Image (cartoon, rainbow over all chains, first blue to last red; front, side, top):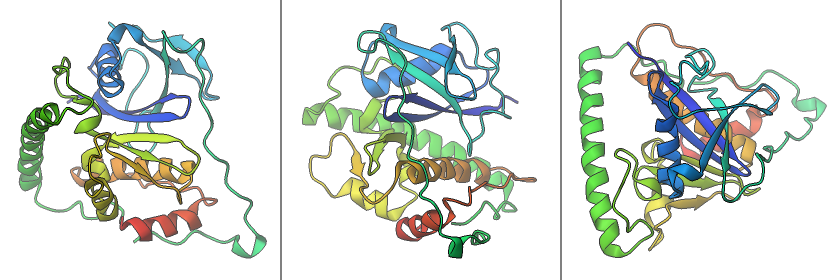
Length: 117
Length: 150
C-alpha cells in the first residue's frame, strides 16, 4: 500500500501544498507545479531542503519520492516536507521569504492552549 | 476546530464516497476546463498534464496579510463555508484568489496544513496522530477557526 506524501513547495512568498504517492517520481511534482504556474517543465527546478531551510540537493526528474528520502514520517499532512522551487529563467538562486514570527505573548496569556473540540 | 475524532464511521461507505469524489472531481475538472476556455480566461491552452488543471479548478490561492501566497486544493479550501463564498462571489475571479488581509502568513500556513490533515485522517481509521499547535499561535488560531468555521 503506497503512502501518500505531503509537500510544501516554496518559492519566495509562495507556498504550494501538494500531495503525491511515495512511488511517484519527482517529475510528477514538477508537472503539478508547472500546471499551476503555467511554466514549462524545463523551467522548474526542485531542491531538497535541510532543516534550516537551506538547499541541499537538486531533485532529479527520474528519482522517486521515496528514494529521495521522503516517507510518511517526514511528509505528513500536518507537517509537509518542504521543497524549494526555483524557476530557472526567472530566479538566480533559490530564495524563500520566511513566514511571520509570532508576537510576544503577554504574561497574562501564558497558559495552556484551549483544547480542541 | 474539530480533530479527526469521527473516525469510527462505516469504512466501506468512506471508501465508496472517496472513489466517487475522485471521479466527480475529474469530471468537474474537465467541465471547468471547457467552461474556462470558452470564457477566455488564463488557461486557454490545452491541458498537457492530466489531473492538474492549474489555477482555475483544482487549486485556489489564499493570500495572507503579508502577501504570502498559499496554493491549496479547492476541495480543502471549500471546507470553510466562508472561503467557499469568498471564492464564488466575485465576478470574473478567474484566478480563484482570496485575499485574507486579517490572517497572518504563519496562521494561514497552519490552517492549510490543518485542512490537509483533516481530509487525510477522516478516511483513516485506527490511530490518528494529533495535530500539534504551537502555543504561541493558539490564540490566533482559535479566532481564525471561529471565523472560518473550521
